[in-house]
Length: 365
Length: 254
Image: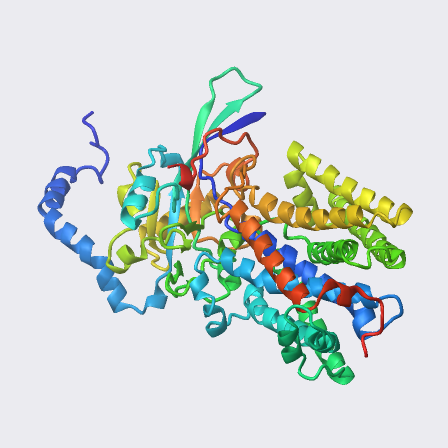
């Protein structure tokens, strides 16, 4: 007996995690990814990484300071954010996240201050813009190696916890098969890191050291490696789903496979990753293009998981269709977050000009 | 042969009816106060509220949907309960398509996935089994909305907090039935205390279980729903495999 079922009356559940959430996960991912990219040059002081790592640290700061604002805006009761701190609920990853974010950002701010302190002091002694303020916050401009290592450890622990909670927060949602896959946190980390490399490539491309081909090629190699890992994880995800070796992956695949729109999304994502890989590998000088592609992939992955995931009804037939609203709950939210990001970038690069940041030289003066 | 002549239970029908009619005012009064008295006499944890939905009796009139909206001031475009309706056609047989109706609401699970994810403990399960939201504590993060496997939760755009069916806790605490049960035309919704062995709910559930007819939605989620179904077609237990409706109401469009 074959049946054809047509839904005639049912409820359409609205997307409850708005583009604000996509912005938050995108920015916090870029931030912890860029922080990791800052370690070789700033902390380990590896030759050839100084400029790259300082630019990455700038990206980590700008994204890290913008991200919590987007997160706060995604709350439908943002004025009650303090409830997170007076009603701690250990069974909730989101509750833990409320504590992990300050650990990471606190560590990051301290690490960045210690890393940039000599440069701030240098800028403070110049007659550049905001030199007085730079001199003030440089607080002597000393290079404190031990303190830098300590702050890096705190920031690293915070970054790891943020990466863990942002992935686990979605992975534990059994009601959404697309989210409930053990590989999702790893996919978030890999794409976040690739996006951070892309952001650093953009900073490098628009900075005064844009002609430093060594730095571009070094970043391109890292990006290529990240794309290989992204493709490998994606292949494992698909294999687990197709073969049925992992029931949760098979369920996730079964939910999206029949949809033409999801098929297009999958082809797009794979094509973008492969093109980024090929360009980064064969034409490492194409820093601007591969940087933009990597950022696009990081955003698209989160958009697909968050918004696309919520377009799959839990009980209803077919799919919901989401149209981006133009107001604060949609486009204006994304534009506003981008505006804050630009403002912070301008502020920080006024305090510490690109030229000082991207120059290839030892951090210690 | 006169009707009921050989039926010993039928013979006192008239007298029973007269006695019933005479006692109607007293019965009505007792019905109104009985649940409250029971609640007062026994510790709250002794009760476990649940619901049985007899799909075979539902006529899809949406009276429950409207009663719930009226009782709970549910904003336009949102629903705490709704009777989902489907057109079902047997493609290999020559007969007109039929209609299948399935009332849906919060399942007040015994192992509710919405509770542990709430970052501020605003969603909780009462000792009597009701899963509720503390609207004063809720931050509107919508994590519970994501975690509910039944799409039973939503963000209320008036209160900006998570919203869902409460089993009409305010009515039940006052000794009344939930609005949807009270108004159900076909008597498809039976509400009561699962711990009351003599109660209609328990008796109906036990009978359905004995026949192997008792079902819950999405049993594979292992959430132990306290909303049970009789007459639930397996094709509608989980995500329905079919064609989505064309008309989709949105809160912003109503």
